[in-house]
Length: 202
Image (cartoon, rainbow, N blue to C red; front, top):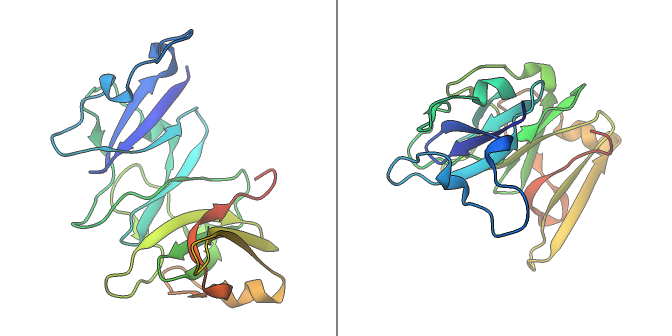
């Protein structure tokens, strides 16, 4: 049975069976009609909760963990406690874990990137998770993802605000490959990162 997994801004998880969505033409129905958000909460991210999928979930505070799609499912319309969110932190976009993950990628708002071996990640059903990236005071984690051992492509914006991608490969890639929870290194070209471009077939 196909389901959609939902995470709200407070870290609660919800799920809706795909069969509940109206079919045919029309304007459809708002997603919030299928779940009960707490006062002040808002939808953060939606993922495909098909059995067997796994996601790296994280907060802007730099903590996160891998979760099985099945752990997002609940019969309770009001959802269930899922991610521990510290004051001022936000849930960032979950990253689908590839079949054979090699490197985890973390990106900070100050333009730094850290790569570390994917096996340093921890799989949990709920909680705060582990520290993924070291951050300066007031700095936020903006994206997580995965890359192969040969190259990683980061999407973002240039100093002039134009969309831009940067590919790091070869010997340059090794400069960013450190241990989990380190601060990483600045991306070239003063790129303001927004996300990791998935590798072909990844």
